[in-house]
Image (cartoon, rainbow, N blue to C red; front, side, top):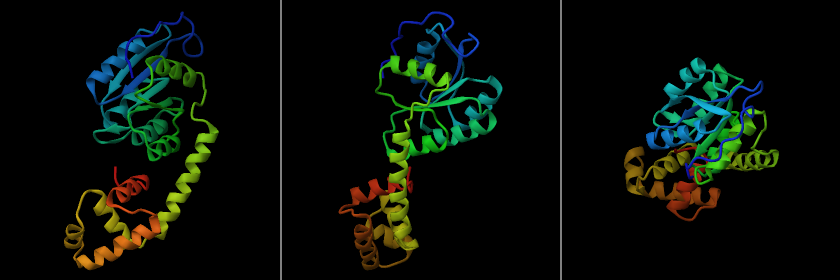
Length: 227
């Protein structure tokens, strides 16, 4: 995403009532946060009311500063943007939520939908798309389309069905593989034989349709078993 300032709009294009759109930035990378702040404050119809670098900082900031729009990264030091979003919605339900992130997974998009976000924007998008999205969601527009939501829900149901097909031990093996443990390390961790681990891996491959450890890790991420 280029953080070069876009052409500011005329006065009066902000929040309902003519006031500037109040934006809270939740982003732990200072350079990115500062660039976003400069971009947003350059617009005549919006202003940054605060910045937060973690879930713990985001919730009280949203409560105290009263933003119209909260711009959230998905990966934060003490949790995810969806953790922050859910807490923010509970504290300030009128605030609109936008995820602005490098995360590009269905799991992240589904988490955004579940937490009530109005938009999910990849950081590779142009700066103009970010400020346009802020204006749109401030006016009540939902930028995550019903079709996208339906697709995500269908994928999620499929993933949940696969997860339910696994035995508790298979889930343990998959989770340990996903964080980088070898088959022998998994066996030692769980106190079972290497042969038993290999049996579980073959079973996982059949149930999940994966043929390598890399595919198993991808599947575990889709299932939300690892971050």
